Length: 368
Image 1 (cartoon, rainbow, N blue to C red):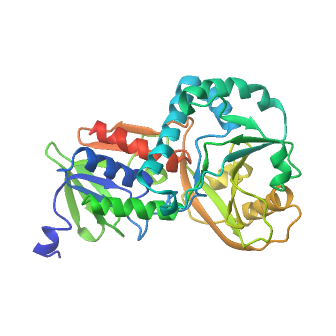
Image 2 (cartoon, one colour; image 1 turned 180 degrees about the vertical axis):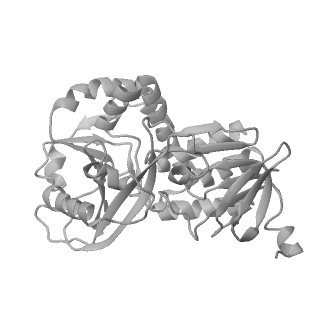
Image 3 (cartoon, one colour; image 1 turned 135 degrees about the vertical axis):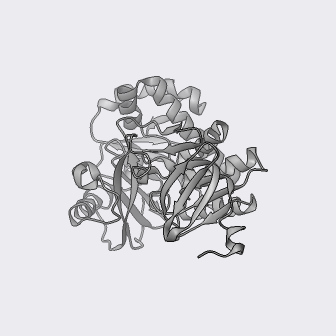
């Protein structure tokens, strides 16, 4: 049973309840409280700390590699692709407006893409021309061959640089966002599972575990890959990203964030360690899951990639292995919409939550 004290504080009715305390949930709460300071907002998170992709990613501050932009334009057309790239680019700018670089370990170290065939190079001028309206630069992507040697990537044929990209510490960014939410008087229920939702003309009733419930005027799902329980009609395909991190490496030349094979592989330096993730295109079926596990097959594949491509001349040891769960669809556009009279969603961030979430929060705040 519940006491009157709990009932009138933690479990009292709110104007808005957000489910999910990852990047999209937190940025949505910040945007709503800045636009409507008088509204009461509660975030419900089933884990002790935000999980999913937000604390499990590679810490890239990126908005799209050359081959990814080309592939998206072929799949979705230029209009949608540029809208999406602009949303990511502006999202990264917003992060830097809100937080100092040293608060979130942000480094504008450059984003790079390794290419082993020439075909994408014939599109580089077209893509640069299209992206001029987004980045304001004459050329967003440059061919930087001399850096192949500088970074110790001797087995790679071409290297494309994007000077607008960098890296950050995802955990520190989440902590800063949580602090910002507390400043704005956002309420939290951590370690609380949402069982189901009832909506009537007056309110939304959120049923929690242990027979508890809490009401709101409006509800927003920010549950990304874990949305299928609530949003059965939407196309949300979970995609696990596996990652490994080496022990410190002496004389490591690598500096920046790197993509390979349309972004299916991604790696960066974390100080003098190498963080590498991806490869799910080697085993799509197994990686289409919400289970936080690593598989021997993919971890071996990543280690092989590490040895062959990134550290051909180094000895190394693996310090950590983990996985995060992204949400994909046949298109990379996120699903941001009103589901019913009182329910909304902002999900399916296609592995770009760091960059997209700040702008998604603004869109949701406008919608409600």
